[in-house]
Length: 235
Image (cartoon, rainbow, N blue to C red; front, side, top):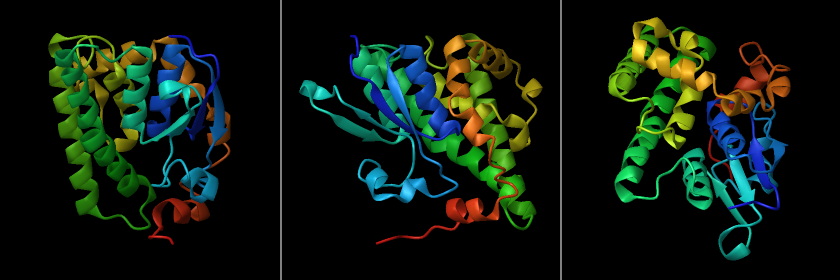
């Protein structure tokens, strides 16, 4: 199908944000970029919470939602599934194919993303080095790299054909060095990683908002760290 009114993307260039910028670039559908500076607390503004109550980006508003009425979607995995269904691309129409994609998308959402995120936190941002935490999450990321490496030993992409599962995972593999990993130890993963990065739409997706992100040094910005890492429940 052809989108006539741009989709509104609420975004910051992180592994979760990249999932959606890559998907939209792959689809070639028009979208408007709304930057949500997570280091300055934009994610807590009432107008953003109205569409993303978990105060996390990315989120979208599709003005051409079901029955032609607008719809908002939050959570990166839910957005990928919605866009895949709507446009009929990168998400199979048959149930068996969908199961293949969905299980690897959920693997990323429940495993690769959270564990890599913890490895990043304790290796780079924690105010004190905690050897147990560093080892725990670095080792778990290594295990997950082994899982994806084995999966890719006999197929080009995670679910066979290129899909939203690949888009969901690439951003979390991209900073492998910060996770304490050597991608050369995983030859099938390395082949996939290079193939993904060679895709023009993936390259464009990674460029979205890059200039804004480069204005901030999260490792040195204690205020941004407080916003990101020190939040509790709010009224």
